[in-house]
Image (cartoon, rainbow, N blue to C red; front, side, top):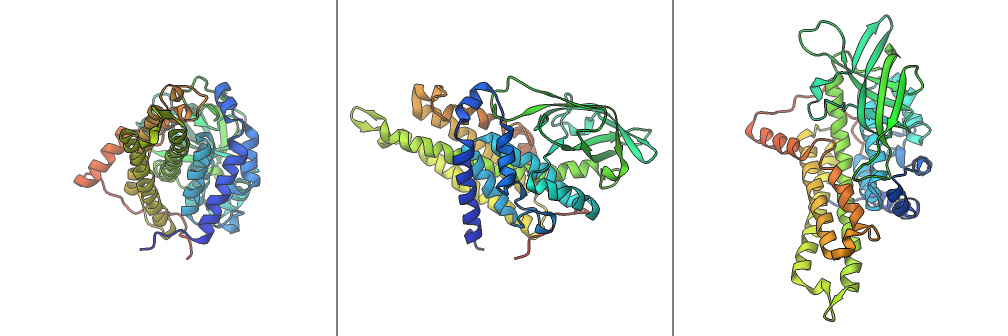
Length: 395
């Protein structure tokens, strides 16, 4: 088993790192303070080819493998979580799910513009009364001739005000023995669509989050993704892709914490000695290093499984669960190392602490992943082969 990154991987990592340092970090303190997202950064990500990572070349993407996507997410979140969220939503939840479940006509219609950033995609599953309890969705789709009529609302939708199209999960209206879920690609310009931003977030303040609403919104039948009844499977597939980007991004927060603590531990002195010489500080640093290195191995494994076309629901759940927990612990320790300065937004560790907390909620809460892992181990849960999988990457 070869754990070495290829020369192409290293170039992609370096590209993403430079983009983060040059385009995201400048001004992030002010944008975070003002809870202001910058649409231009998203546009620059498209121009740099970042939004096309892991999309096959035939659909306008870079044709790189799925480990490349993880590397990009790690380096973007090293700069700020808001940039990685764009990759999670646009590339992971939306584009990769379209790549997995779309017909050839649908992929040719939508993926090229998504790969270049000409169009921005988002994902709409969560509702005010259906977060972890996704089977209790209230958004409905009513069949009407050669189209469907959507009614309902979604909340905590990243890029709600920026996205041009949304992958929407709804419940098919009608008298059915059990719920029938459907998935659509919905254009924001359709009559009956509206959005509203959410303010007052604890973290990821430089990212756009909001609610979206459907009022008698008519969706053409050719925007149905998969078949009627595939909606829940599509949603869970999307979450596998999204969790991969969150897991790899969490390693970026740990790395950012190490970056900040490395310089502070050497600059800050107590009784004439660098605090980095103190054993309790070294214990916190070593835990960060362990979280970073173990986290990389976890998401590299998932990336490899994606590359060869293996289902990875258990493995990506483990990576998301552990990496996000370790990122939060690293950020908490980074604040501790900085002391009173860590409590001020003059230093970045305060932002890392707030941003890392959200990742333990979205894409499956800490508790949900705990249950998932136990149920796999006890045999209460097992994966059935999906009718459609991501295209494997040719070696």
